[in-house]
Image 1 (cartoon, one colour):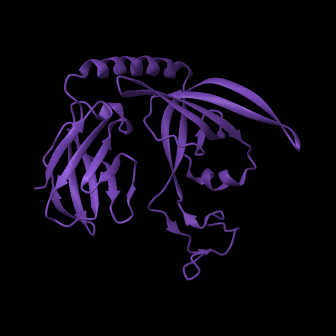
Image 2 (cartoon, one colour):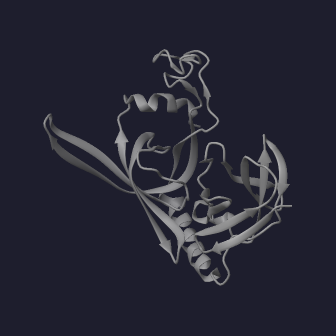
Length: 262
């Protein structure tokens, strides 16, 4: 069994060191519930990539768990453990551990109250949105992608809509409230351009990267995220305010996203 040394644990992150003699190329973080084991994230050492941006490499054998990227309800009173994989096979498993820091239960109580109030408001004036994130397991399109050239050979492909990838994006659904709609006008060399913006608030702990595309299932509109401000209490992430710009329906970026929506 691998030895996991906890170097630092706060309300927002957990830093640990992996001590083992085994060879491995992937680290997997899993959470145990009463009925199932859920994979929270995996880190590919070969490509230095994290699947869900929860596991971050800090140094040789030293990694960090971004606790604020894990859904709040998953953190408290749950057991977590690591698996080390080599070529897709489990080589070692750690003992279980907790993520919550000692003496911080008051902060989690405050956040729980804020989330409860949000849920009540959401039941009256809320919406469901979809955030499109890149699929690390997407495959090149067999119709328009040339393996020898290493690029797509057509921009008009009915199978992948010209992206060159099959299932290049994955929609992740989350609850949000639309709290403001506004318009801005910008004077350029080509004249006056109008931008329609919407402001959302959510308690989802997704990674709202600037430039990402989201979709409002109520208004059936696509948006490009222009700003995302996270709020926190004592290091515990609470809500996120998202400022997003409406994308016109004829924008080429949203054409391959329509089939992915529920």
